[in-house]
Length: 75
Image 1 (cartoon, rainbow, N blue to C red):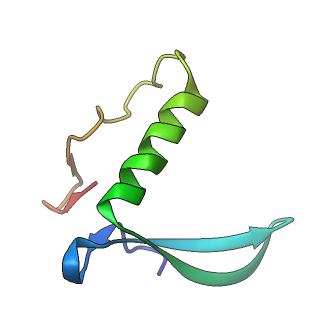
Image 2: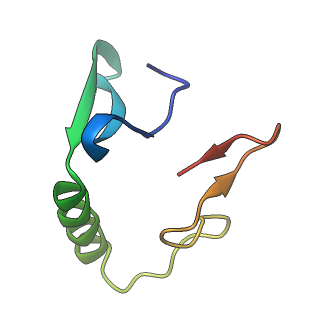
């Protein structure tokens, strides 16, 4: 899972690989599977939690894809 990014799967579900860590120790690998509605709700909650703080330099704008070296496209 590490090294793999967000991907779309059947029926439009979004799958986000997660590495679960406790006190710096690797515990498990898991996938967070979201419908588009759940992804939008998570997006809204994160935006609210971040408040009106400016985004750090180098962070992509919302809903724009990110181009990584080698031509890979990730979100």
